[in-house]
Length: 226
Image 1 (tube, rainbow, N blue to C red):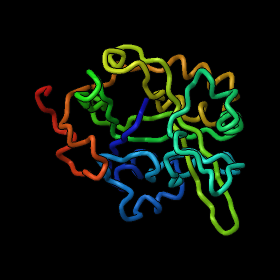
Image 2 (image 1 turned 30 degrees about the horizontal axis):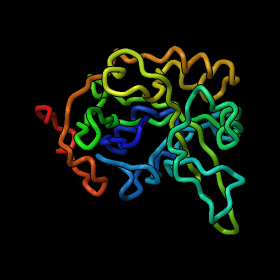
Image 3 (image 1 turned 135 degrees about the vertical axis):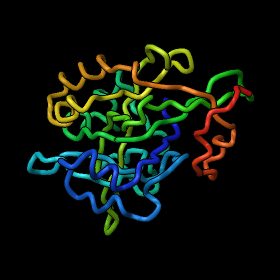
Image 4 (image 1 turned 45 degrees about the horizontal axis):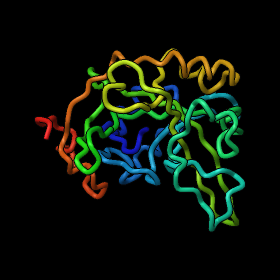
């Protein structure tokens, strides 16, 4: 599960980190970054392949809209896609074959504990480098409306994340970004299985993150578990 994203990286930093990705001017769009509590249906920057096979930035709605979706039936639970079923689910299977992307973020939140008293935790790279999430993207069209959207691939948790939740995003390395986006589905499936978690740092944060209207830097500050 991955239900809230933090992306506190400035446009200039993202441009420097991924200078091979074209179209970086869109990172300057107001309200795009930084974000400290981005919920599903919000918009985030991601990297995908263009028609020539090069990497390019895109701004995508978090929550994949399949191409065949009717305007009055836009799905609202497609912000994550389970790796175990993504190749068969009608919503995701075409994108799994042809349209994989990489979503660089600073981190994400997860909740653990008894119902009604769950404690939020912030998961992020210990060195504050970009966390590369494996995703899928689609372009939905209806009359004059065009929406690029994405989902984040998840898998069974391993390592430290397993202590907090049974699901986690699939993390990529710089060395596997191109293979994830360009390779056949069989290669993508192997990258899902080989994801690593040793770079993560995890700490409790304020329950203020429970309300997605709160979006400010202090949300990621560590606290004593409540």
